[in-house]
Image (tube, rainbow, N blue to C red):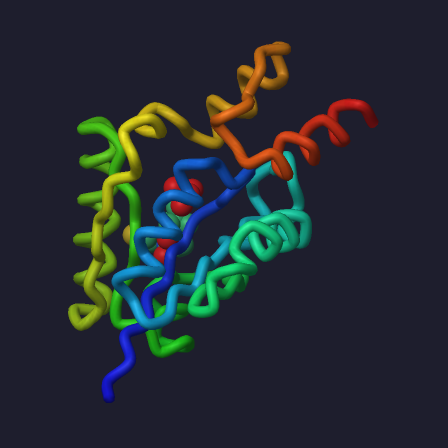
Length: 161
Ligand code: PNS
């Protein structure tokens, strides 16, 4: 039988409850879901790539059809390397749509056979982004319910260093 593999690419710095919600939804509709962390040397991340891999592996270990990987270069080329036919992306609000549409259409131009599949996270996460989580945390606000407890703990460990 034909197996459907999707990649879920992103920065995941840090993984949020919105990301986890999407992984759960994606794990139900694809046979295999690869959470693919972009290795981007230009950015100044809060967590390095190995720290993000470790967190995501711990947070997704209970899904038998989800694995965590890293990539650099083009998403479409990475998708081809792992045999994925779809790219999973989350759309929270209308504001995400324009950027996501641009990426989806560019990826389609680069690789017409690769489909982008958009899913909506639960509405309680519709305003949660890694960027805002980092910002409010650094300014001393609570981030409970926005990120998994493990991520909150790792963020505390970082800020106490
Ligand atoms: O979590 P993010 O930062 O919104 O994820 C963006 C990501 C990783 C999906 C995007 O930057 C990407 O696909 N980068 C890889 C390089 C690439 O393929 N660029 C062209 C995409 S149109």
